[in-house]
Length: 197
View 1 (cartoon, rainbow, N blue to C red):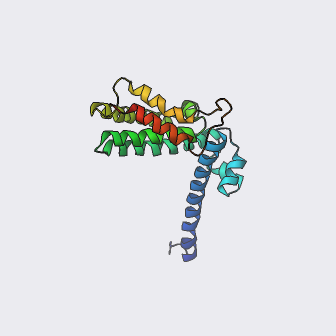
View 2: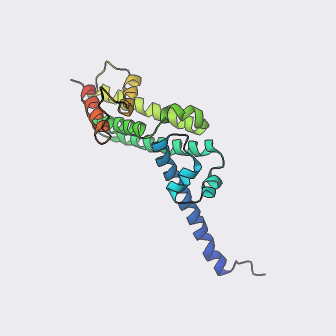
View 3: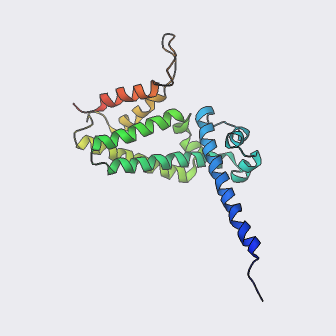
């Protein structure tokens, strides 16, 4: 008995899987953009519109909101963990520190409520990534301090907290924040102040 499937079936199975993977990637990328602009309470309809798919596609992929938020947080943390490894691979400890500090600051500024949502929405997998990133960040900071490139009068936790400074928004004496240059200006001043000597 011939158990081979018809050629037509074999030829159509792969595109379905590819389309599903493509849609999943589009939904996740759209969710990241939507969360960055509107915060963690963004609706599935907004995410679907941003991704260019039907809202049913979003629900099929992420039936529960916590699953979607965990996927967004995990994607961002994976990116930052990769940056931390790149930082440790740099021969120049200050160059590595600047790379990670900038990455952390920009991601924090771009993602509304990210840091405060890790424990609430992430679950065990995201908690594990968070602890991994914290350990890598400590190593990057202490390495730069050991090489005499980063000031030693700050604990690594204090240096990490400073990555949240560019995310602070608000008007000062009637002057509105400059979205085009504000983050980079604050980063430049912070890095200058953190450098030893």
